[in-house]
Image 1: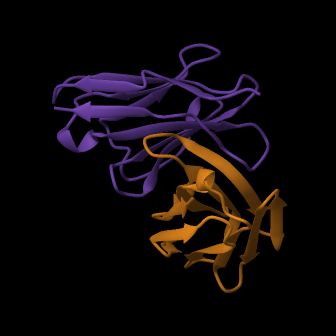
Image 2 (image 1 turned 135 degrees about the vertical axis):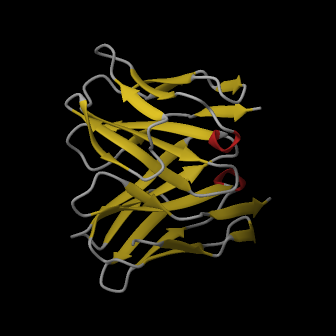
Length: 112
Length: 112
């Protein structure tokens, strides 16, 4: 069964560094999402992406964040200058024209 | 603003018990509601999705109901097993948006 994959599974970075989290959505999906979960807290929506542009974003998704679909398979989340409070599990999700969103296993980002 | 609450926050039951997890949401203008399972440090596994026009969905030992007018959903797990131990998350998708709003989850432990 097709799955959403994410790399790396764990990323450690220093405060102020740029980080790129990578996702490979299910191949025929058209809608792509990023969510995050700070340890012990709720899963929070960050951004949705369709037709090569952001369709919706939350107040968390400020100028430090950007998303890109650089080719036909990858979907990336870039954090320009990481802060300690960016430490979280980041989940990528995708879907096509069904309501269900399919989530990846997540990337744990640790900012030191 | 949509708020999603899950009760109880934690639950410990002996194997074989039938149990009910509760989810409530403040805004009834939802597109659908999805129940997820999350194992420690892992991603989100979709269990059941209920469209706003539906009253319930079943998959194996799981049954989810939706009462949109009262802002409630329940997840019923029949004949619980130790392998059911995980955190169960409820998420609602607001009408006219792409994003899911998640609850804080119910941590379930099924004792052998």
